[in-house]
Image 1 (cartoon, helix red, strand yellow):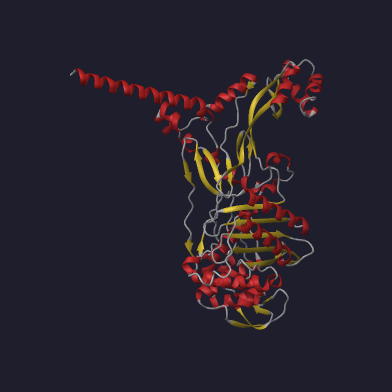
Image 2: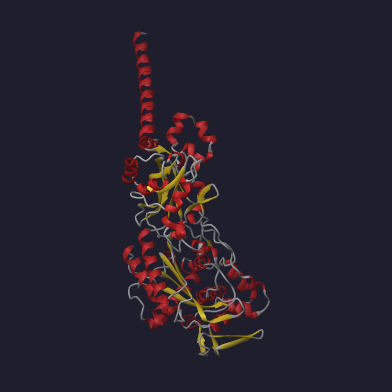
Length: 582
């Protein structure tokens, strides 16, 4: 019996020690990890007067090619200068002394200092510790510093239209554009519960965490944006825009297999840390998702793919090209108005013949043509995780007039967004599947776990065999026709097509001297890792997209091949079976 009691006492003692250890570990974790930032703030508050409205918000991260997170949007800590007007003895002297260490607007300072019934006026933000020290050393009555936090974007203008920013609307500070707005419900934090997390909730009460859903869902957003790729793309876009004095130039680099966007850039851009200095708020708009355009000839491969998939044409099918067609009392012509005689469908893509894709549209018929264009998602939102996405304008396809289908076949008369275009074109190279373009990768929740952001699975819109055949035709466009075949790469297969569209006039018809240039290409062609889309609006002194965007595309292609160390694929496409290539 004595031995049995000893065993029981030993077990009880061991259990008590274990419980004590768990409590101590939990307490240490709470003090050092969970509330570490909180205690740091308290230290700052001993140094300065605490402010009651410190910003609390999750971070946004890019990820490099190895999956390493790179900060894209975070919080920065510093101080702000506050005055108590009633305690300031001489406004001018106070301004003169303070302006020696802090950049102040004299008129604004004196206006705020004159409000003697106001006990709290902020006159400067984002001061570093050294500047705060100098302010306190002045010892001016009626002045103090308060600790504060603000949103900070380390890349400044990098991916500005994609990231968006936070701003006040009345008294509400929240995400207003881009990912900041799209993921507001995740990034926004409950101020009172800022430092709650999984372990704290275990020790302080599970029921409380269940009731407060805002705690459980707040966290950080990890994106698919690769910062080096993003920076390179933006540099190319800036060069194109400057060289051709375009209104805007934009580009996207996407994985056409799964919809992950590696880069999305637009120029002119803006500094996210100084967005308030932008004169016109329209600069903040994101034309990738918020605007639609008549895309022109990069739509021709979609028409050709529809014809191939329906079995109404093959690459060898011929027609008699007279250089123009008359339909419903309207005339459409090739870009140069010239006829080529008897040509096949490969030459239609090589030479970008409007009459050729109009021939394919006529062979498809209205219902089939409409079915394929709707199937490519041209009339619907893509579901990309960015705010403000619009639908395409393709109501012309409800018409009974042949001319509407003919013009749509070469990308005029219908208007779609760039991201909608990218989604449709990706299906040409990925085995015929429609993807969901996206930027979000995962959420790291504050309560201690992560979750992958899920998007709809790709679904089939054309046959895999059709994807292979249209890819083969687009590879020949690059090898034989694009800039006379001079950009062909011996070790890599590239599928691509240019697009030149006239810009509609608000008075009806089209401008004779204003164009939208576009370009898309994917590679390695038979198992593409990347699809690149470029667009420049109203370039000056040049008519065709092949002149403005071909070489920038090739530069991007070479960069991606080298950066990701993509192995050569020439000679492999014909030897591998289809299922291994798609």
